[in-house]
Image (cartoon, rainbow, N blue to C red; front, side, top):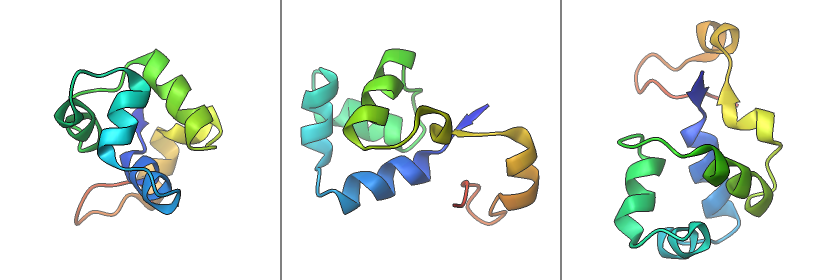
Length: 83
């Protein structure tokens, strides 16, 4: 399963949270660690996803792009899940 990073980023921005605030919320040592996760360079841990779900008001299951969903709705140009 793929994490819907686009949804996480857009929801964070719409709620007005900075990368630094999210990094602090997740207990990461610096904001670059959060940025790398949000960009897909590193994976979010399960406990981080659970915390993001609550903080960003996103149902936990919506954080994931199901394979069937990917086949239908994946933007081929930039490879992100669309909502």
